[in-house]
Image (cartoon, rainbow, N blue to C red; front, top):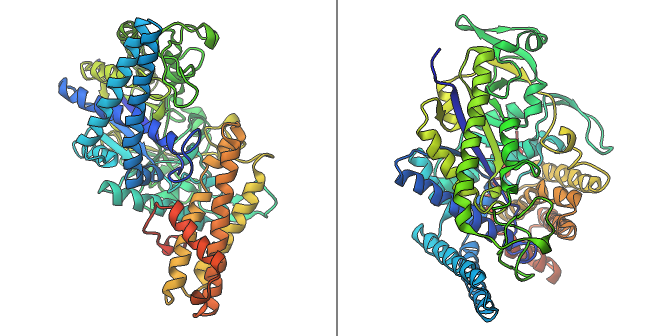
Length: 569
């Protein structure tokens, strides 16, 4: 048997909720600035470094439409420059403090921070202050595959109307294509949340919905060829069809359990998806390999928990403070952390990157031994883990890419490249689920947040009625008001708001942001109804109504080209 084992696909999911013009610190634009400084720019630099070292990096990079919209906006670009200048200045203040304390090592670390932020500012200017454009350029060179997603990370399985799901997908694809200059064919399902075809019961008492369309069909209708799910959806899938002797064959549900050597229910092979039993698949599902991913993301055994790496949580000053300490130990109190020593890091990164590559090879070897086929290991992570949460993460990825480029047993590729070379030979029906707690929807539907779904269902139901009933195709004023209302609907549907509330991370901010978008949506649709009933009403707007329109236009400045046809089948 050949020494070749299979392929490795690194998938990074870059996403942040809409925060422009909605606060700065501790919640708001700083989330975006931190991610750009500590993750997105370092990842771009890492790709350049690999190329400089004669390696070919291959990354499947998710950049959600709401993230692209923010990174490409002038408000972000100006704010980010000020942020980097402020960070360098903060490090200079720290340097002065450390010199007064006669602490030479902390002064050395402060000088490193000054250089770090000044270098980022220079890098940002070199790419014309356009991070999405820089990622798109790397994609066109073949180093990246860029994934699209829903417009605002709307949680598809829990939206009440299929029309709302289609609008989220259509708006997202349109935004990605406009900003990147090309249309992605891969999609990151928000929260890896999936729902099959069939009857569906909402999490609150709104009544059963019959004959829902499976998520795989909705995304395929918009040109999506592959998407990503949590491993347990593949592992609990139902066999539907198989490709043998040059044609597709309908098979029984028991085939997956009876013939594991065929690759059924394996996370090391993409699986075509069709949940309604009507025919072949138009989109493939790819699942992460949990055994390999655990080596990075686990708080107990993951590489970032090693004592030599930079400690994220301990900072020199409470507001926008910088880090000067190392992890030291997994159970070490913040007060007992030791100072960070950068010179101790490179050896540990090498050790961890080699261990990671060996785990990839072990998984591929096990799959080949079971099936006789060369499969794929897909490692999916939040992009912000690398650089933001784990400062040395981009260096780790660099070493992984360099190692795999020199190893002829493993092919490193994007997921689109793998699918092109290895078309799916099985079709499955997936169960419902997500990456969240217990694998279901409880993180986004529970006693803490179900009140949000009651409001959301009213908003989406009303909007679909307005799109069908109000004369927006003939009345420009109604058209503009409904477009602005559609933007607010997309923004209030973001999965981030129930997530931060459930997790207790930014509860007040999450509630405030959700209700702001709801209030703007209702104000705009109220005015649209009045204008539709009286063509002269726009000239009779009250001072409050004028303010409400202006308020939405000032605060919510992304998705400039809302198309009301997105909500029409």
